[in-house]
Image 1 (spheres, rainbow over the protein chains, first blue to last red):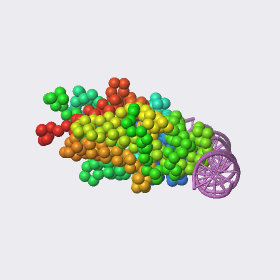
Image 2 (image 1 turned 90 degrees about the vertical axis):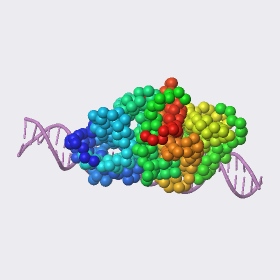
Image 3 (image 1 turned 45 degrees about the vertical axis):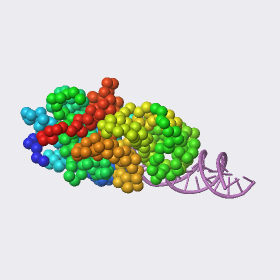
Length: 230
Length: 230
DNA sequence: TTCAAAATGATAGTAATACTATTATATTTG
DNA sequence: CAAATATAATAGTATTACTATCATTTTGAA
């Protein structure tokens, strides 16, 4: 994918990190290789010690960037959603037809990811796998409410809100735009997961994509009929 | 909730446990109090040692029932889905109208749980909270595929299949019954979570329930129009 | 160029986790 | 009543998720 803007920096809430990993070479190696290592061994087995070994650096140095592996996950997921949000805003901007806008938006949030060469040290394809496999773990914790107050999930929530606003423009009478938006985004991750691991309970696979499923679903859900009575 | 059948035993794949916790007093105390403790401190902080202290038993004794806390989680989640499946089968059985059947099925899988007095040592309301907060962790692991082969997720998959069959009966032309079924079940858990922690990105709350949202959605998705062209 | 501050690395240490192994003591049952 | 079975107690292990301290290297401003 080629973007028109160069030198974009994806911005992540700065309370998530101690020191901005974008600000140094070591920081970039941390993000780059944490993505690869988490993908390789899974977040549960991932440790800063193993990452240190992998990048030829020291565990203690990594702790200078992130206070815990949980915060690192929050960083990676926020980066990912900010990147998706950027694509959503960019792709729907100046599109006059609301339905086309919604179509595009759903594609952006549900599609299989392709590499983005604008961010050389981040492999978006691998990061997407991490989001599919590990994202829920970032909020399914006893600390959600306090971390939510700290603003750790703003990017994700803002993305859902943008999508729900687009939904609302297509059919202002539809009663559940936020729930539909959150269902599409979370549901797409889930369908991608099922495709890879529980293929018997999804129709997504070789021929059908999560994008198709959710485009079809959204279209039907938002269809306005002359006959509003049942 | 009062059931017509007494002495039902919810059956969980027996590879999940070493010794059936239903077979002894200690076993029942393990399931009963693990539910309460996981709810209290979260699965991540939950340990067999803490559980042992809570039930006045020994860590090593608990290991005789479950080889790890992960297996215990698999047990609790399988029990839960088997219990939901039982309700689904029971409630839709002998219902002649397919649409009514689907309506009932969606209610069963999306509603807020009420206590079931048939299983005295299991608090279903609390167990439901665990499912909402921890279920994904049972399959978002590096071992999913091998555990899936071992049959650890059969109950869940069977439930989704039952729901997708009911969907299929209502509208045999609908192309994605499995994806819709998995989206409803997983999505309902997600909406319940959002309601409790990220209320700004859901419409579910005091007035609207996940059940309403998914009933409305499913109805629209499966509606057959005379005009099949777009 | 210099020199001090900032960044990184090395080492050590800690409490807790997720177990396994062994032995002892109850409890059940044939 | 003996033998089998279940449970409890204790100890031990490698690993985790850190914190703390000190040494060394890199940097950038005067």
